[in-house]
Length: 113
Length: 113
Image 1 (cartoon, chains in turn red, yellow):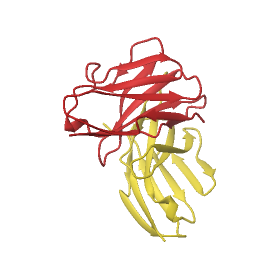
Image 2 (cartoon, rainbow over the protein chains, first blue to last red):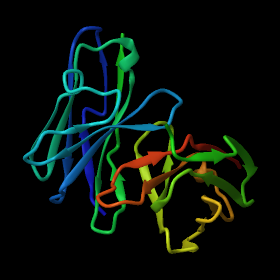
Image 3 (spheres, rainbow over the protein chains, first blue to last red):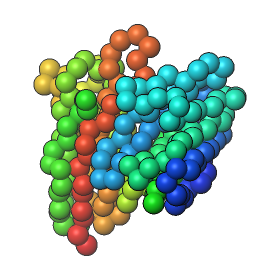
Image 4 (spheres, each protein chain N blue to C red):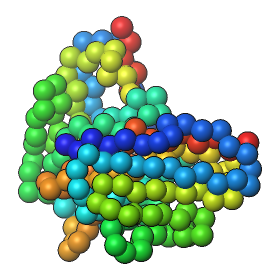
């Protein structure tokens, strides 16, 4: 299974600022996914990031608010822009392996004051 | 909208007992995956079961899938305090190029020593 790391593991940010979350995988993968988990809730897919193309966003999520980069096959970033307290969540990246299993990073716990 | 619905939402058992969690979903699927999440951390992949499989085992875990009823169950035998966590099912819908995981709301399992 892929080993995934995320930075930072947690952060406390002020309203109106932006935070960039990094996701690093120990092997080359075609697709990387970004999820959000609001407090006490399940996971919701934000977007799918393929290397060399624009990310594909799910309904309710827009590029201006959650810009994503995918510069190579092992790395991706998600930025949470112009944050408000409603953005307080755990943000997780995931990848899919050759047998369709999806593995998740440890998550970034974001608190917006 | 969320694909899966787990029940029960919360389950409390004594150490050594078996724990059964159920998941129902709405559309045809390629596969169903079960995850564990400890205290709001990252998700740990437990097991994947494909639509043409009926049962899979992994250690103390047993997963069943009934596609006619659009349901799955996760059985943890001889539970331990360390099994205390939230458990989620997630499905990938059938169809070419489907890769999006749709999560259920989760079951919060408490194993009392």
